[in-house]
Amino acid sequence: KPGSICPNRIREEIKMTRDGATIALDWEFPDSIAAAGATTTNNIRDYIKGTSTYGPITESIVLILHGVNTDTSYGYMRSIMNSCTKNGWIAVGMNARGYGQIPMTTPRFANAAYTNDLRNVVQILCSRQASSSKLFLIGFSMGANTLVKYLGESGMERETHGHGVPSNVAGAISFCNPMAIDNSKLTFPW
Image (cartoon, rainbow, N blue to C red; front, side, top):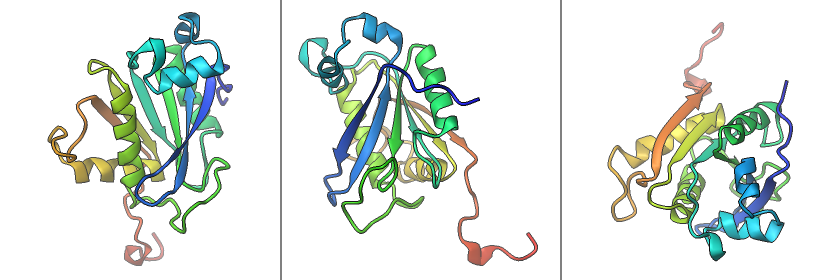
């Protein structure tokens, strides 16, 4: 049974600086954040940007990437986001370009090989977090492939001079990663 949409949910649209594409982040917050006073939409918007009287984000964030032909409104995404918030973490579902009812603003559509949007979102989230906060990454299907490719491209080193994984990133999980995307290598019957 899919999880319900969290009452403490807000959407943030982000324009990618490299090519002007738009992606959307659906933020879900544990009740503890709402109880701490970030109850209005404007207060929550300030909080997720690490601004205002709240300072940087101190809770752990779990960034979740959806699979192909789905978005953060699908049951499996709602369920994992719901589980995260019930455990006191902030869940952020990343809607890739062209997904989640976000209009296409560039000719490039989301695909498993393009990691720059994920790289930008990880950098944005880490810049909003306190240095002691953790960021965990989860990918499903196409999102899993993008996640693993991003980690492979970034290498095992921590971020220096714009390369590597930011120090806030504490772990990653890849679910149902398609290992043979190139169909020219598949033979029938498989």
